[in-house]
Image 1 (cartoon, rainbow, N blue to C red):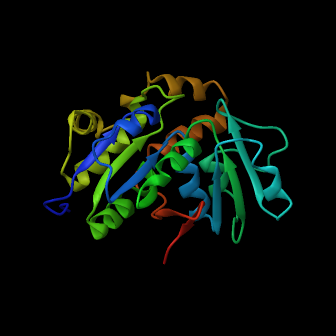
Image 2: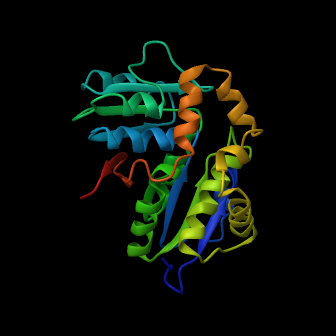
Length: 240
């Protein structure tokens, strides 16, 4: 697969850097939080979920509960008490989510999704949907900003690898961050999980128990959830 010749792909390594991107006109933003928010979104849709409303504050969740939404909330890597779901992709994949609507708030991922909402089109990306996402980006043919969520506005290795994997599929890196992401992916692609074993967020999640470890393993697998969540009017959906 090759991107259109005039298509550029830029990487924002953290949400704090996103306002300083060079691509600002008529572009697509792809929000990436592979551990675990965007992987979990893809998993929820793969399990039958009909809609996900990303929220950057916990206060915004409760009005949706009264409308029949399931509440999915995470802070610091842990599911919050009183929530129906957290941000565990393996939890979603183990359930029948048919028709479920989610109101969803996480530490990093939903913040990035909403930050990217200024783009002409905002998509969600992870290893789980890499090839389906790249097909959509190729069809659109517009410039792309890959927005890595990182950890509380700091760089993280695993999101950057996802960005590199997308660029590897499409080509057309634009700028040093994109070239770095591609180089890191080339070094990691044989065993991306192994490459990230010493990453800080991997270590953080491993301390949360067996399900979190299963989530990490799932998140590093390619193309397990071939869906492309699209943000329209504040809601993520799958467009047929």
